[in-house]
Length: 230
Image (cartoon, rainbow, N blue to C red; front, side):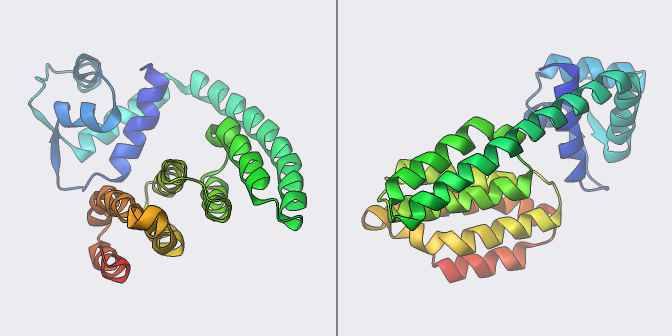
């Protein structure tokens, strides 16, 4: 992982970090996906003290690290942002073409071809699409997949990608969007392959739980669990 990637991952972690909590560097490594030696080096350098891997740091200290890193890498961050914007523009041009093809195929009730066309587009451009659009497209992939008898393995990736897109915003609204996404498609997916889809939805809800707790949304989470009967 390079420094720019670490900055973006640390930003996501801090967004969900309770102000009063202290986390070890090993936890930060786990949450960001960065190696433990990298986290130790960065934290020790910015905070100007030797920190052992099992020592704890506060939310405020980590926010200071993030701010310092963003200042140090300001030029590279601007260049990266421009590159991402160019990629997004290219993806949106491709989106218009792909959706026109999908509309024609749906009108002809050629569900399998519509599904393949849409999933190919999403697979090629998902990293460059806004989170809300990616969530919507994953929902469309599930809907067309169900109509074209896609197998559970195929449906699984779109359920997981849709939920991940919601949670990528790192705020309470994103968690609630994940609830809405599962609410919209969970019941139908659960019934696939003689009910085997139930385990998929159960596993995905388990993944959402930590975010629900972090943003004080556990009551809504529990209500959805009851609704889905999982």
